[in-house]
Length: 217
Image 1: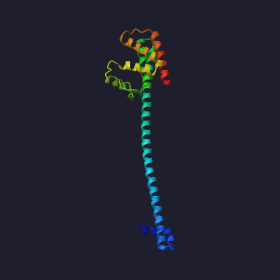
Image 2: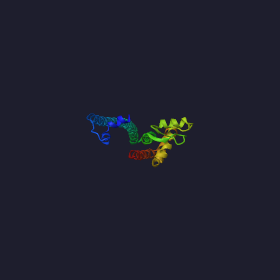
Image 3: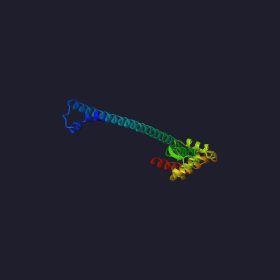
């Protein structure tokens, strides 16, 4: 077997000092061509496999980008809806304030647009899961976050209380103003509807400050 392999190599015939037969030369050249063809075929196969792998990776990346874009559009749409809702309630507040009557409803309608303005900043956002050990989750609304609070045994917290705590943590620069509107609203709704015009006007000013800060973030 070794001799048969050797005779196909021209150097064999040089070594034995004989003229290389034409059929040996042809067989050798043919072998070189077939070897080159096999090499090229293998290289093509490798390139095709790499190209296919790159296409798959590109598809995964593009699908991820599409999901992120869709999520971003959803987040932006949600924020726009909250801001529009806030501005709708704000118009009602200003309308009542201009009338000079119903001061209790002025402070009440000052608080509700403030809720929507701060919610547009608070959500969606990643927070540590209540009563967990370092586990984080993206919450898209106060309802979702509050449900996790209550599901983990913290049933004493109302939605308003949870929101105020989040404002204290995330928006400390308007924490005092938000608490003031909350307290004024609670007093007017449940304890004493006789609210002075001064308190009503101050509530409108406080709302303007909250709106300005939230729109500037």
